[in-house]
Length: 400
Image (cartoon, rainbow, N blue to C red):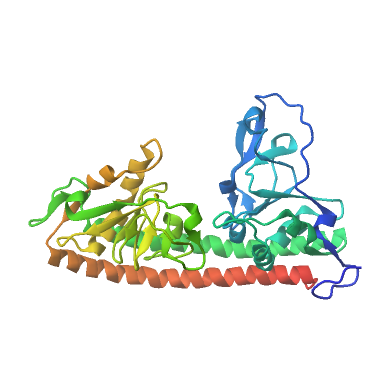
């Protein structure tokens, strides 16, 4: 009998995941026409908050039969690559055409045996403690770290009898539904919060091409800003140890105002200065942040360096307002991106500096109100996550 990290109720036992699940089982020989509609699940189709496949694509069998991960109805999909794994991308494969599907090569597949139900496995791998242990097992280079198969095979799982599994899963699901309802209400409040700032921006800024107040004028961004397009350095220069400059590649690195360092680069190619406005120039196009330190920028970003006639936060707020238009501009290109020339030719309204500063001060007040609301919402979300993890902890200790 295996000794686990904590005592289990009578009738339960510790098993290794690989004993009760086939990990990445081999694909059987499939007799299927090349044009047969086949379920396909890219990584983005797995919702990290719900732990569900939110959209199954339909592709011809010939398009997916090679080079993708195979799975079957009822299998548990578990993201193995960073940051998808840490974010909680795991789901049970359901609603597959003919009971089979293909998806991202970055999924591990766990196929439950007759001793365990899929929901028991799925809730288990959704635990934060499990994901933290999985992170410790990462192998691979910077930005390409993955959970190895042997981690899953050897990890200990508490296993009650099947009927007990079903009873506990039903209890967990009922409790989680209450959490989801609170989340739905919180999401509605978030929309109202976002609308507050959007309304303020629409009141302040004229629509592109509109008539302007006296003393204002339309100028091209290239007339009032230096524009530095990012360039990605060799991946061999990336590191997590803080060697060199922080390296930002796109919107994924952005915070509410300043980007968050995760990777550093020892041989930066293009450098943004503190105070530069950073803008995403590849999908999603138009998102912005302000550099608060010298940093290396990759090809997904550009740095906008305002000249003397332009207040940087005036520019930042206007780009927030203009973001839907910039996004459309990117969507009209071949690569869903905007170029330096595109940025140079973006028109912005330019009032006198004192007027810019007065309006920025007003928008700062609105932004402070929005930030306070978001902090309260974030605290609620943190409490909900703690509650979810507490429910799962009790479930797998036999306390539900």
